[in-house]
Amino acid sequence: MKTEKKGPSGRPRGFDTGEALERAMLVFWEHGYEGASLGRLTSAMGISATSMYAAFGNKEELFRKALERYAEGPSAYLDEALEEPTALGVATAILSGAVRTTTAPSRPQGCMGIQGALAAGESAQRARELLIGWRNCGYERVRERFERAVEEGDLAPGTDAALLARFVTTLAHGIAVQAASGVCGDELQAMVEAALRRWPPL
Figure 1 (cartoon, one colour):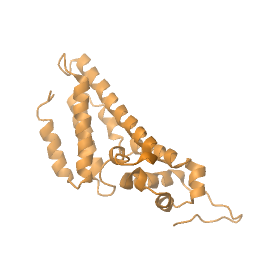
Figure 2 (figure 1 turned 90 degrees about the vertical axis):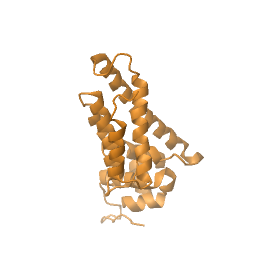
Figure 3 (figure 1 turned 120 degrees about the vertical axis):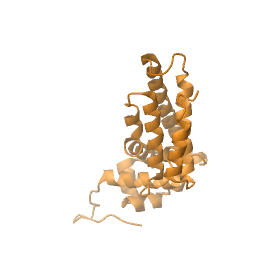
């Protein structure tokens, strides 16, 4: 395991917390909450367990901060998608963003927010709850955007914005699962185009 270099006083030198958190995010993304052992995390972060606890709190808190970083970084396509001028543009940007993020060759395949703690045990209950909340928040934001599209006349009166949001977010989650199983980006993008060929599909 990597250890921190010591300064003249024998105390650990400072480290880049942003870089350390980025590395922790990648470990959680690739291995899930339970698979990200303390040794694996501190080795990837290049710091001691003592420094990790001092800087980030316990493992649950580190996971929460890593998920926030994921939302602000790799998963930031959702924020951009919600700014699209039409509901179809929103759906297209969300699903295409999911394909890009979950199949990028330089990063773990799949989605940290989908697979992070789906099959974890009782010790990961808090992490599961955190991810459920994260996914529900994403759904609610899409639903609100589609409700606005109905109000603005972009979607037909009577369109079930909640069901349409569930359709899009479920597709995005499915893309993540397929990507983690090795399905390539081109195939997933073709699926997105087929799914949106008739819009709205409800």
